[in-house]
Image 1: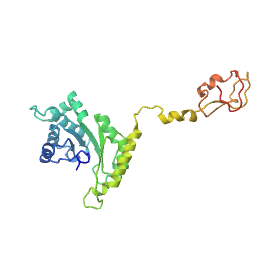
Image 2: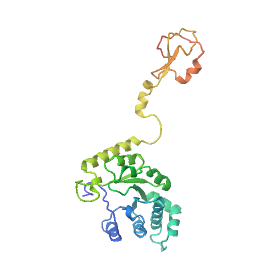
Image 3: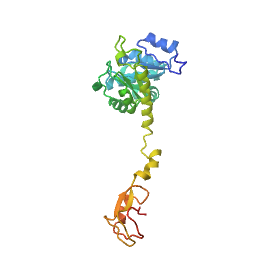
Image 4: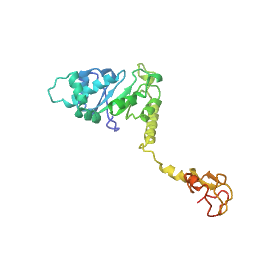
Length: 273
């Protein structure tokens, strides 16, 4: 069904047998390590040994626990075919190596997450995305267990490249996830807003947009005659004003003009050119 609709199929393994099934039998192309397994070093290592791209969810985790997990991943990526005994020291060495850091950058995304269903807004701590990004310099995402769509959309504005959101066909079904999940209309609405945010974020360079350039002359201001000014009359604070449009002399020339003689006649309201 996913292939028919051009959707990447994804499932999460909570044990080695499930991982082998997903990787070897289904040929899945990307794996997610769930928050509850972030200290399960043998399972994390098995994920890394597949050499697939990994999504690491970090609900309930500290920065040190995230770093430890990344060390296991880096070790697994580097030492898949080399007989090196796993250990904290080897994980740390792999994490701190140039090869390990590059592999993590190329293949791992870290998801911020609050592991509660639904997650209270005052415990979501969306600014932790900045903390994670600064600490590890890796792509970030957000696994959202809050009610509604607003937090997920805000996470994209904070730099999240992956959004995980639970989906249900009936919020009244039994189980912990349904209440904080989205129905089909809400999911479509969330995606629409995320696409709008992605467009709105732009390229990050501060410069006038295409539309702004069209409005620039209308909205900015110029020096104008605040009263009738005769040729030879001195420009003063009283007979010069600053008003729209911005097609005349820039207000930056205001002080240069003061005290000088006018070289022509101006009617009140004329642009001084």
